[in-house]
Figure 1 (tube, rainbow, N blue to C red):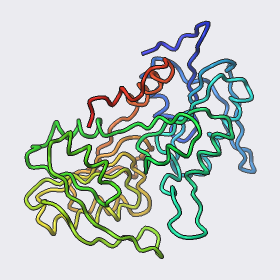
Figure 2: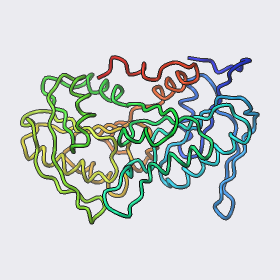
Figure 3: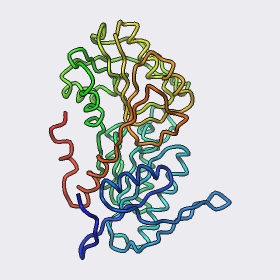
Length: 325
């Protein structure tokens, strides 16, 4: 990877918000450079102040911030950082969001609803970002919301590699918890060479986070079922899906998701379920009080660092996933 040393033509600089500085530091370490010293604090009124302590003129800037709780604060902080870089004459600004906030609000299901994911893309463009980088967006169409390059990274190689090292793949069935995950799960089945099952579900349109499960399509009896989703929020969908799989005769259920949001009662639901292991990446901080014995957290930092290096060196981010199903 690049050493990040300054040259006549290009200079990489990394900037971290306060949402998840540990991940930013790990990414910087993978790249072999240091995070740019930055003053960040809140005024008594709650307004955020940003000032970079080194010149950023002409640099290739990468602004790292994962949109965890309190999500609106960290999004605003990243926007202000981008604005500061633009006004300080950074040559190119790439917003790096391992977890992209509001991604689930990507369409109007009923009248008088917002498309907040599009608003997010517009806000970053207005602030001065020329490029976005995110890991496992909730839907691929979000890439079209931003009028510029979007690097959509996939955690599947990291998660699948972990499972390949511990499972008898001849007994595995990959399970999509809903129809929207089928395309993603097909990439898993191509890689693991195993069958696919789908849980058909319907959400209650009048109650947030309420899901009505219906039926399993596919062979799960006597098999190790790997439930694949992009995120675990309240854990209700995953816990209910696991119950249905066990009711259909599944021998074991393992859950894998890129983003461990783990809101509300998620930890209790997962910890007290019959699920044998929950595997996520560290796109979001998972504090000690949300850790439990069944939880495995894999690092996303090497993947993000490689993608940043490809962008900086005018290489191909897509090449990182060549050969991956």
